[in-house]
Length: 158
Image 1 (cartoon, rainbow, N blue to C red):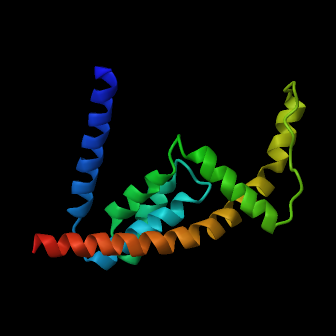
Image 2 (image 1 turned 180 degrees about the horizontal axis):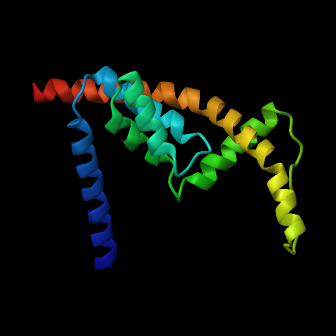
C-alpha cells in the first residue's frame, strides 16, 4: 500500500514540477503558445525519433518558443504512440481510400518482410495525411489553452 502511495506522490510531484517549469518559460504568451502548438502538430507526424529536432528547427526558424515546442512533442511517447499512430493511419487510410494494406501472416519470412517494405510508402502517406487532419484541430485547441495558461501565469508573476 505504501509503495503505491509513494508512486502516486512521485507522479504528482513530477507534474507540479513540469507545470512550474512550463509557466517559467520565457517569451510572450503568443510565442509560447505558438511553439507548443507547433510541437503538438509535429507530434502527430510519423517521424518519431526526429520530432524534437523538427519542432525545434521549425520553432527557431519561425521565431517561436523552442522549449515549448520540444515539450509538446512528448505527447507522442512509447505509451501513446500506438494510439496516436493507429488513429492517424486510420484517418489517412480513409481519406486516401486505402483498402486493408497488409495482413500479418502467422509465419514470417524474407518474402513477408519484403512485402511489408513494399507497402511502407502507402502506410507513411496515410499516417502523414492522417497526422495533418488530426493535428490541425489539436494544434488550434492547444494554442488556445497554452495562450490562456501562459497569459494567466505571466499576470500572476507581475
